[in-house]
Image 1: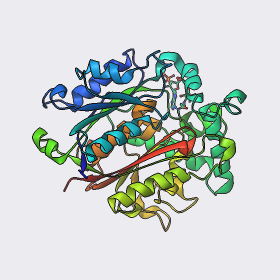
Image 2: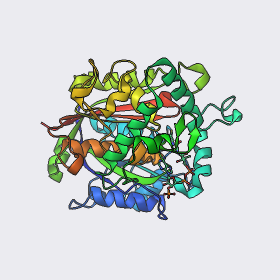
Image 3: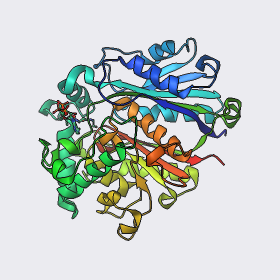
Image 4: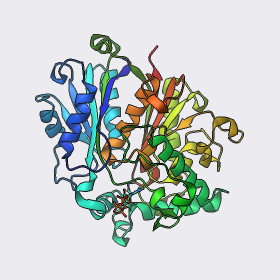
Length: 387
Ligand code: COA
């Protein structure tokens, strides 16, 4: 089997913009290929992660983005699993390169969520929930995650203040990320006093509705040396689909994330204690805590300690730094692009390009991207600095 490497990355800023999704994608691609040969001379195939056609009334994003990039007449497909779409595009690109099907595959993600306002985004996101009972009873993403947050606060000793601290940490991290949607710090009182969205979740517990695009080129080691870029190995991949309906699940178990990360660790031959930096899917603050536990960074009930310096964490915690990009909460969450924004952060951390948010000596990164309620679909990637 070939090894798959990230050869280059690029991303648009995250935020609200008047630009259509295809222009955001062009910005991401231009950044990824700056100083390199034209993409048409390099890219064999394209996968596009995109959550919904409702925002811009556009399907066929595979064809559209390939055309927009001058990549006609090669495979170009959209993949979908709500917010995990970006990581599935990445997974498909890695699979093709590992299998020797292609030498260079572009994984990209794009979402233009703000086109329909908060109401449009809320309706589009509700399509990720089970239809027969849950959609019909009017569930929304915040209301589903509020159930999960209530249960987590009930079953553990964590408090709403602990969740608020996760938002504070991620806003602080985002101030060092030039692509982030939010560039302001917040304090615990601001988070706790922010408007209720779906109690116990408040405005600052939620990821924002965002626009953005990101692109990651996956290649063989030989293709990397032709390009002359610094690369990062995708050493482990794991995905798992889990229950869609909330009524069918144990709310505080994110078993799919445990399984997906476990597969990625196993492929790479590492464990949670080897991971230096992690981007985990904090669509709502409670998700960061749950995922830190599910992927083995934290003991059960202690996931909220992502906010602490490693030396100040409880026994059983690893030294990992979580969501150095600002996470979904503060970098922003343009749904189908999020998994690739996570990969951009992983690449930048492992190649020493993360500027003021650089974790010194970072060698190994875990990315965990989820779609649907919590882990209805999880994709985990383990990245390692190229040897
Ligand atoms: N965190 C912090 N500030 C936020 C924010 C967030 N999540 N969302 C919006 N804001 C800010 C805006 O920047 C704006 O600030 P300004 O007045 O200084 O310009 C203000 O709040 C109002 O913005 P608006 O877009 O009108 O907010 P809203 O009330 O319509 O939407 C939420 C807020 C939380 C309901 C919306 O962001 C949301 O639905 N988030 C969840 C998205 C989601 O479910 N993602 C998928 C997860 S699986």
